[in-house]
Image (tube, rainbow, N blue to C red):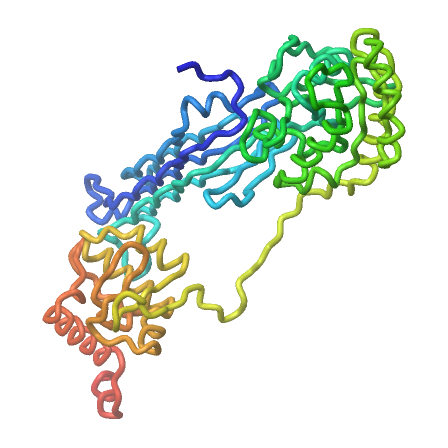
Length: 486
């Protein structure tokens, strides 16, 4: 099957890089038995970045290669060696590319060379045990896992950045006109649908330079999928002015400039684009092929009716170049007026939106699918769960402490959760056992990779040990003070 050389719409399946895992390691060296933790952090996953390149004019590469993946971050290592960051994937797109999500919402409108948009963010690397060490947890026997990168589908649509859009029936003379006005050399022939892809040309009128887009011809019923024109009308959405090119020399029965204009206006009215209605734009009329005597007579006949509709009319010929200068300066006048009416671009600003005081950053809701179960939603809890190695008891205990300090357990109690209730955080569901968490000052070190609180008997022994330590540290009677002083 032959694939066309021009593609202006593509669906991309993007996968950003995963973050590398942190490492649990203890420094080992002769004569240094207590070297301490030295596990490095994992590297950041690579981003998928769309960048406007003026040398790219089509989305053809993405038609052939829709699956794009950035590099993964590397795992950390001992001796405080952090893993390498994943390589960002730079995808070059044409100027005027619009990025849509799966629901059709606009995510970015990429205009201007060098404009960048991060379409998929790489995952953060996990912390090694050197970064997790504290005054009480001197040598953690665990590290955090790297976060997965974003996986999403996006739709790229190319909407050419042109000032003037040429619309009209097939073989109305649009390609000849753009070739006569500019240095563009589109294919020109005497049969319909010669133009299969949009053509762009640069026109100079005095001190004004503007671009003109020629799209494939429209026919009645294009809104229902007939012909080629409606598929490419997205390329005139950004135009400041539309130019109706009406064929005054057509030999088809039942056609004349007035009926052609009405049919094209009907199709334009039915088009719904991202940047507003096409009929809201200024529109001029060019009566083409007036070098033919019969066409010149027809143009003189229909011109008064078109002007009565409030349209500026120009009689032109791409062969004899009659009327082209006047048309070019008229288009330049409208383009300049549109440019002057646009607000000046504002400098890029970074908007900071700090969280309100006392806002927990998560919420607990009953699970709609199962009575007595709950779902915890929030960036921090979900990220902490993704970073936890559930095969390591000490890492699970560390997660329980973090959730308790964040207030998740208190909120579950207020929501009516009972011991043993199923609680879902992210992709993990577990039976909730209230622990209350611990302060760093109360942490009881255990063997690396283990946490005694996860077993009932071990929890009892740990509580007894903690009570004994507190009793030794804090005498409560005068006799105890005297006895300690002696």
